[in-house]
Length: 255
Image (cartoon, rainbow, N blue to C red; front, side, top):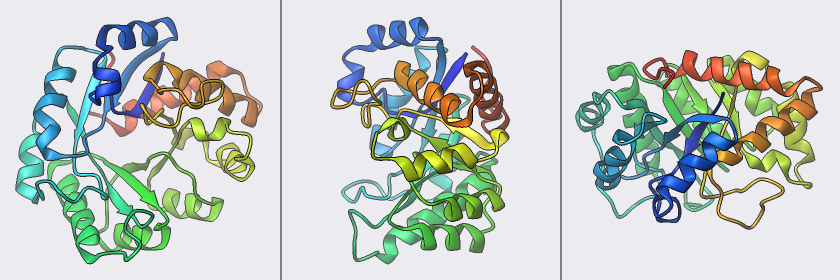
């Protein structure tokens, strides 16, 4: 069984095809997925979706680039994370691509999520874009617990720093792109017991589906690429990433 550790099946592109998305997952050997929260206001809809299907888990958080939304505090995040279908806090982190002035509110929001994750005992899902130094610094300062760097696209040095903090590294369909040679080298180097796979659906569809709406079933192509890059059988990647998933997201369990 494969697991998509990060997707957004509650987004309109996929929610409108709810049954089809699940059927395609099953046909491709993808047994479970985390539907990742990006706004508190959207959580009831997300929770309703994952509650209907044993294949789905949820996280709760506010994406670092979202501004016109409820600003959560630790109590609010922990209250929502108490739900048995919620296995993580996030996605959270820093995004200096969309906020080039690196606003302090974004860093404070990140700290709030880290503190909530520690308080409720659930791992972080970390978003990092053009903000590696500050992301790692804040994780160190807050003595963050377990978590994952989602959709990793940074350097090997950054990956090694994240690993030293106890984080897992998750790769998306970006590693299947022709122009991703540097990232492919990183994906080949991360320890097998710290790897996760994801789609970030509906975004970043892997080759051969680039330009189309991504979906959890296509995490299979990420696993296939990792197997090629690392020179191991597909089954090795499948087993390792699934075991890693349940080790990190310990509140999840096989469906």
